[in-house]
Length: 288
Image (cartoon, rainbow, N blue to C red; front, side, top):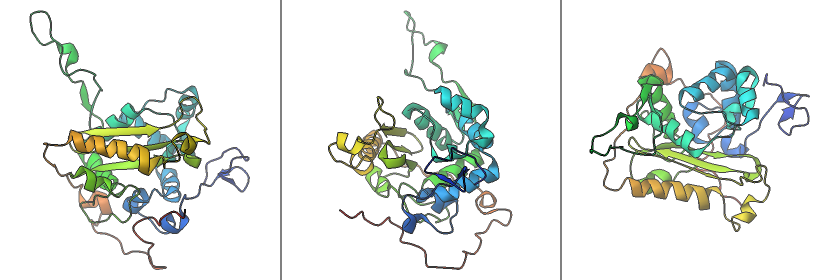
């Protein structure tokens, strides 16, 4: 890529250029679009995409959805974000609350509401006070929110309005929750952290497993008793929580984005590139 990093980084190539690779090349490599690039968590799709739109615009979009850069190192990178190539892969420190609310904003047609710890506050006379009223504004247009959600249905085993999903990193979430869902898994190098954020139209849940005392831990799996940080820890916590919270609530569908936003001015899918047969939709099982 055009982004410059420390030549000593394992993601560096040709000197100081940022050249990330995919975690599971046989399942991830190859021609991708928004749906399969997100569904299969393809690094080599999203870094070139970030080059096209500009890393500074990706950072600004995150800010619009309420993501804050609290760590001094992240704040410094965000202030000159045009060179922050790794941002698209989720390298900044964040909180589950920020992430859940960002996803909730997209599920709410792009309307952002500040997180509040209370539903209502009353005075001694029983009158409701305005201090606890929702503080909301339109962060992104409904069409943009619908397009993002349509793509985000792929990683969690749901299907886009256009039937374009092919591959999922957390394929069982849709079946467990039992309602239309959108979301994304997230993993840093060597399983130093693992995250899952999932939303329905009504509720969003985010989970993160990490070592707050050793951000670059190499022992997370050991500390979890040998369990997989994703499949056996954070994923289960998130989708079971969302399942229980959605009991008795209707399964509301996500609005489809305009076809012209999904496929361009012609509003139709482009022919798939010629080449080898596509890899299987599910990631191959790890050898024990």
